[in-house]
Image 1 (cartoon, rainbow, N blue to C red):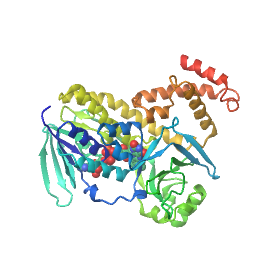
Image 2 (tube, rainbow, N blue to C red):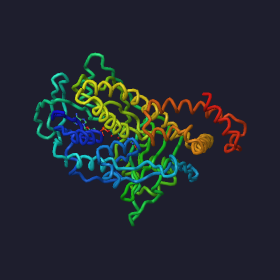
Image 3 (cartoon, rainbow, N blue to C red):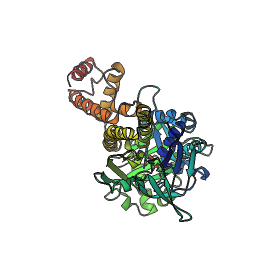
Image 4 (tube, protein in one colour):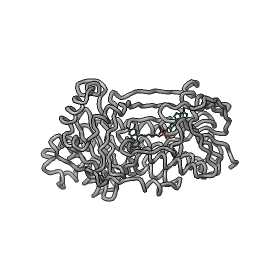
Length: 449
Ligand SMILES: Cc1cc2nc3c(=O)[nH]c(=O)nc-3n(C[C@H](O)[C@H](O)[C@H](O)COP(=O)(O)OP(=O)(O)OC[C@H]3O[C@@H](n4cnc5c(N)ncnc54)[C@H](O)[C@@H]3O)c2cc1C
């Protein structure tokens, strides 16, 4: 393939990974980001969003040869640990023995990946370059330098828009004929808080799990960091009885935490300072179609599909975009219009499905994980799956530990849920959940439904 000049607009998680993929094919890759050079920044772990990396993300990283470096800064979490109001702890494994999702600091991950991209001879990085506009047909991009205000226009053979949920590349495509676009916000927002390490640098809670405090209409989660701290995220409505709008004074915050999260308040010495220093952020969802323009422009990552974070799949899905697109370049060579149209055709349903899954998982995490019947249902499914792995892979495992397309996983999950509703309606299911009767019924339902 001829050495094309390619622009990657946005050097975040997906853009930096994709630039490594492109560089391995020998392209002349130019990555632009509006932020200053992240490699020069000091990343404070407990203060940065933590992300759960799972199988799809690892495949993306391994495909670019950078999995080993990321594994050094990732901590395995084998399951969820639910913290009840009464201090009780309930553990639910995420998958089979040996399976885990991995906690990584977003800042550290992005920094590591930009460093790795910058080490490639044919990748040029440009910071403080904000994409102001693109011309899709001329394949040109206009940047404004964030410090000097200088405006420059560059021409490329191909443009990839990896500039996140508020993508400037996509916003230009929105003005094109027959481009569909929708954006909506959840009425819940989130705030990052920190549980610092103990004085000897160790963790204050189990570090091999994702901690959840499910409180029906809201929840808090905590993911471990390698430096001994935890990054906590409180998800709460913006308005209403229990909401951010009520938490306007240090007393109100302390009262709220004492009431709802009594087992953590002791571990958060900076709670009120953090609460009022850290922003309350919103959660946006974006859908659009198509994800490309002819053979010129292609959207990837949050620029194409911004979802809510409750399945821990936004970045994983973006990394999977890289694996899939790379496979399509193998398939179609330099026929970029074919590469891009097939990418839109197969990834758009996947993007819509993962958003649906993420929305459903919010209810599961904040509400159902505290419900004994739901936990029983999961236990029955796990037992059946371990005895008949060829017949049953739980939905969570399909999404997290396999590469089954998200839209296929969603359909499989709906079918399994219908089966489980029948099983859960059996008389005295709690007393005989591990009996032969349950297994026989499930075997017959799997065959019939
Ligand atoms: C609270 C929270 C928790 C999450 N947890 C998880 C999780 O556990 N697992 C998971 O898989 N995902 C998670 N996600 C989602 C994940 O963060 C995103 O899906 C991921 O960051 C998307 O990567 P991206 O590269 O597409 O976009 P981004 O990471 O947003 O990167 C976009 C880049 O583009 C740059 N940029 C933006 N505009 C311009 C412009 N005009 N010109 C030039 N550059 C520009 C930005 O500076 C940035 O560097 C979470 C998200 C949130 C909000």
